[in-house]
Image (tube, rainbow, N blue to C red; front, top):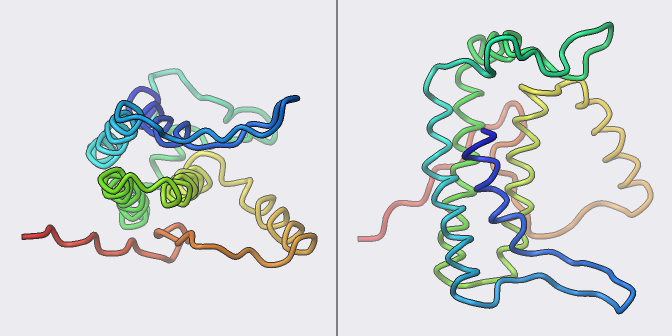
Length: 182
């Protein structure tokens, strides 16, 4: 995750953004072929690299218990995450497919060089990552996230937009990827 998926996702996350400075608002968008190539590399790495998560292996190096110790640990231990995966491998695979689908979505967006869709794809990527992390890394934050979402909706109204769910809900299964064109 740390050495393949995370850096690849940054190629997508960092491709678009808004920075507010003393001089005003600056939009960060891909402008050159090199920018789009970097996004494509990230998308392909995500779409293909995420399948490495299907290979059974330790979640962390031996002895690495991350933040899973103490009276109220903020994270699951690697052993707890592995047990959760083994208890419901269908959910694990759904999370993998959701992330792969975002990678495939971004590959298509890069072909069209569609900046507007790239914004949505970056949000879809965030949803895919957070959905999995809330399940296998820091599930104790699910209740906090629900409260935060409810409060934001109370303050700003229901969220609207074009962002799709890509299998993020625990009972959801990933959508079928598009068939290759012949």
